[in-house]
Figure 1 (cartoon, each protein chain N blue to C red):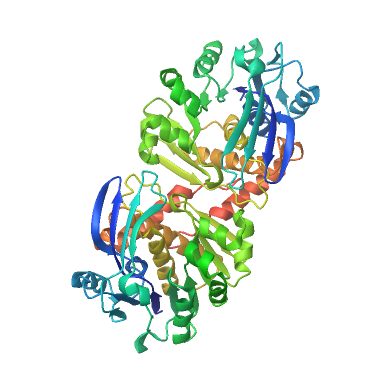
Figure 2 (tube, helix red, strand yellow):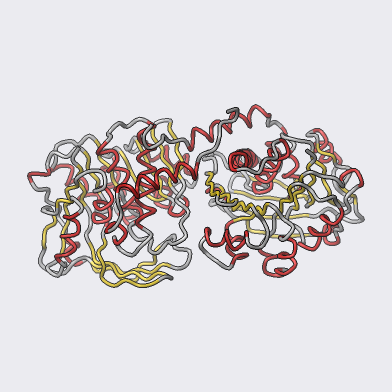
Length: 304
Length: 304
């Protein structure tokens, strides 16, 4: 099934306790499509500046990502600069230069207008809805957002959420959106806004899935080398929706599998700076780590 | 198999966003033995003051806990006063009155001197070692500790850890003890100090087990009503060691089961103030939640 993502393509400068990377490939749509590309072809709608290095597009193409929807705008590419402390769970943003991303008006190419799945990465909820207006109703609409939109464009966000099937946000955002600290109660409030399925990302602690009466908890993979957490959430979404693009059933068994694939892709993402881990990662690596997740979480029945 | 615990019995005053409880039953040995009592008889060594309400001892006795080792010292019972914010993951201590606990010199009654399992709750590591000197070498020695001893009595703690099989501590303590933020690396450093098995408690995020080459991740049970997190860690230890007292094999399968029983008991503990949940909890409730943990974490194999 065809998968469309709309989001950012950026140049990131990241400092972690383990090193530093300057003006490397980043952005939500980038991480998402690289991760999803292990499961299905991906169409990207985004914008870059005239200074965007061609090899980055070449890399995405080599991963089976269609980049015809990445427009080159007049000006410079979106830049983000951030830093992580030893704790690694949260980035401190040092600088954001929106550049061409400031006036991003997503235009979905004709070829992309009949997607089976859409991922609306973290952009203005008005733009997210605008994208949905440009395409035939997809089977699954998934969406991310952030504190900035929850605080500043709550009613626009709520209008968008009415059209969303799967919301993928982090723990703090879930609490903020619901106005409720308890995550079980928060999940019910959020699902009342529209999404039938909610994934709450918890960084190094894993993820929770709520869908109908299903609650599923997946840990993060305990890694010895977490190099750079940037993009982990979008890689999670890429693995999750990539799997659903191949196996679109929305039943419990398939959704839980998709959460594990999301967790697998996130776990690889953080092993290197930028998207570097996806330059060598293979489908076999992914299958191997899926099985390691099984070992990590398996315990026997009460009376085997 | 016989299970001995040495730790505190206290009167707690706790304030949470959901209510307040004054001078209610608390203490590490208390929570531990109530939780473990669902699996095995428990012997407690602790001290209380002359003001300790007799009904509390009666409650423990009704749970199959032998309280003959709880000495009544001259003076008042250990008191702790704390507060939790909405986040609930960490207590803010408002007041500690050690009272009789200040000069606690654990004396193991003759009847208790041949235990199969010992849990050394969070007390001075010198006293923990002193307890081990009073008993025949148990099959399993498990131990808790805290930042106070890690910072203030590191070398004494390290001497104690040489005699410990299972260390059960929280995430921050593990990082502090190992001097290492990454938990996989920290686990290796800690296991180099003696314990062959390490459990890292992560509050609302669950627990990690490290043992030989085994790594096991268990989530916390997503609860809609977390009333009072006090005692969750000791209830976890009680469920974990209670199961091992019944089924003492230290292989992967059995240890993972024990972690789930620990998580189950912790999840019940936080549903009410003090030990109140253990006043009504049944063995059937525990089995039911064990099965719910299975549902919460189960996902299918890659190619079923």
